[in-house]
Amino acid sequence: MHYRTLGRTGIMVSPYALGTMMFGAIGNPDHDDAIRIIHKALDAGINLVDTADVYSRGESEEIVGKALKGRREEVVLATKLGLPMSDDPNHRGASRRWIMTAVEDSLRRLGTDHIDLYQIHRPDPGTDVEETLSALTDLVRSGKVRAVGSSAMPASDIVEAQWTAERRGLERFRTEQPTYSILNRGIESEVLPVARRHGMGTLVWSPLAKGMLTGRIRKGRATDLRRASRFRSFGDERRLDAVERLVPLAEEAGLPLTHLAMAFATAHPDVSSAIMGPRTMEQLDDLLAGLDVVLSGEILDRVDEIVPPGTDVGARDESAYLPPALVEPGLRRRAA
Image (cartoon, rainbow, N blue to C red; front, top):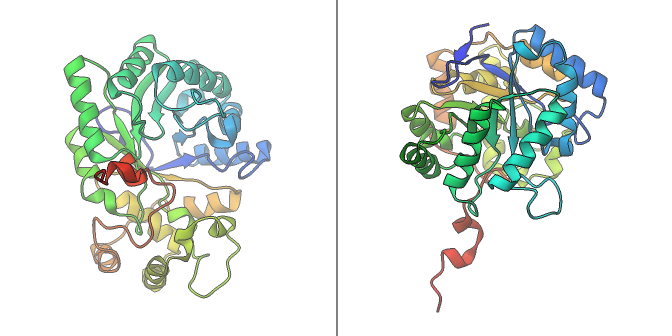
């Protein structure tokens, strides 16, 4: 395993991270099986485990906590807060009020006294970033959190947060967690260069494009992938056309499509680690088998021909963050 530095934190992380969104009610409800999957990933040298309070409403964190008993010190443990945890309007977001509650809940579920990387799951336009960074700074100084990060944050918001932290003497975001795959390369234009400029590590999620790059989604064919019926992007013709061009490229390279996709994500010099999210042991085994794959310049050039650098293919990823101006018509239409 060739470990990489997480930005300028000095923390060394594996090029693949274990994402645990699929452990719990929304994915694999068998705690013992999920724990075995986590242990196998750790035994393979994966040392970064990423979860979130919202995954199965805390169940994923509980599973991770059980799995790390006796192995906590060998793991870089990351979790996130910010998405709704209940119908209460204050049980979400990035206010000091919620951060201080959420971190205690996560520490309890994870069975630990500190979190290595605490991330804001999505930008919170309703909270001043100085308020958020001030609360996170207190957590770092108290020892409950080692480093803080953002997720799905636009480049302009990253710059504002860095500037605010410097001006106010606050802890700054040390990492960013954006979506990135062969089908979603938009972060190459601004987010990755900005993260590099500020010495941030980058943990990318959905390198398999929610499953479109597993080989189980093909044009004109039925699929057993459960989420395909929930996301409009799975039926997008341009994305399906790109997959149809990637399949023979992977075959030509002698690789499963999953290995091509993961190796592409980790090939970018600004990517610290790519988050894989297996639901079953079989899925984990497949991904681990591609850990040492390195794509040639020729193959990467061919990928660039299929999906040009800095572009997203087809329909927008429904899980991506949308700035308020794209959600609220009143913010982009002058009143009559």
